[in-house]
Length: 125
Image (cartoon, rainbow, N blue to C red; front, side, top):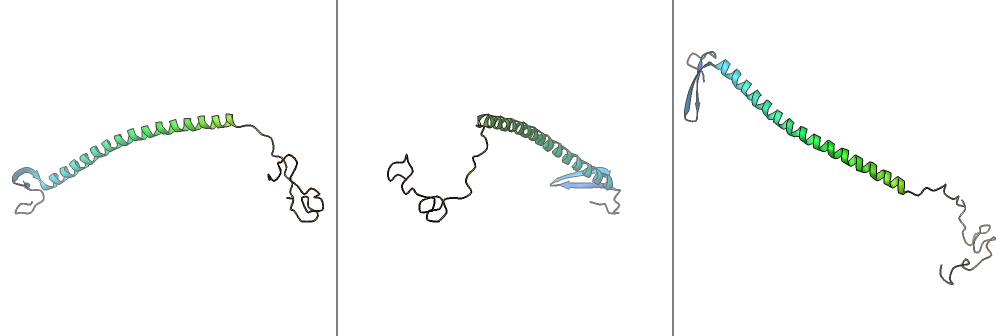
């Protein structure tokens, strides 16, 4: 509130609910103090939040390191358990088709065998 003369440098009287305060400070100084108090409260809240976030980040970093160690151990175990193998055997590029002349297999010119391969039970393939 401003006094009757309306000068921002005059004393201010505040009414908070039913509590009346007479502050012997000019309005400009009172506004400056209120802004500074608000900045201080904001700073305290930000510091408390950053401390909580810092603890959470440290916990997450430890968890990431633990998971990376587990992953490295699992990769080493998988490499140790893997059976070393040579190159894959070469497969023929032509698949035998029955009934096509010039192709190996039953019915072709190279196919003379009409029964199951030896070693199989009758009717078992």
